[in-house]
Image (cartoon, rainbow, N blue to C red; front, side, top):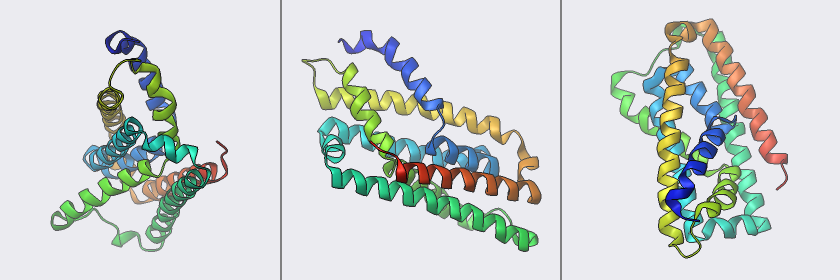
Amino acid sequence: MDLVSSLPAFVPAVVLMSVSPGPAMAFAIRRSALRGTGGAVPVVLGLEAGLYVWALLAGAGFAALVTASEVAYLVLHGVGAAVLLGLGIQAWRTAWREGRHPDTVGEPGPSSGHRHWWTAFGEGLLVQLANPKAAVLVIAFYPQFVPVDGPVFATTALLGLLQVGLETGLYLALAAGVARAGSWSRRPRIRRRLETVSGTVLVALGLRVAFASR
């Protein structure tokens, strides 16, 4: 299949997969609801950096080895489940702490902004790297659009860049839409409810990853 002629099929498929519910979308929505669009940017960039790493690993053949190995795949499932469960429990703890001490909760100050940016980026990166479905996606989906006689790694890298660009735009648009709630979503009582709900969603996703079959 010629790469250029396959793009009309690749782009809609990527859009549909990007808007389907999953750990990445749940994490981006939570961040944008609680921190606004600016707070969601590092998370989205981290998620997409993780996706691109998987694309490069798939192009190099490493991701296929991971999913082919029963032990490696189980380890990846375990790590992914642990990351999601940890983030969900962290959200529950935040909701509980804010319920007990609502006056002590606030946005990070200017001096800690840089550190919080990289922390959020790292969390997004970790969520995507620990997502076994991301590995399976690029291995099962990308080869359909790689020309038989073309360079596998370079083509996969280009497809990954295209998907990252599309998803970044979609997730940032979603974050902007969620953030329009503005101060309403960051009222103490609403914030606690959002943390509780998002924590429940992340824990549920973690349990689904932990017990999902291939």
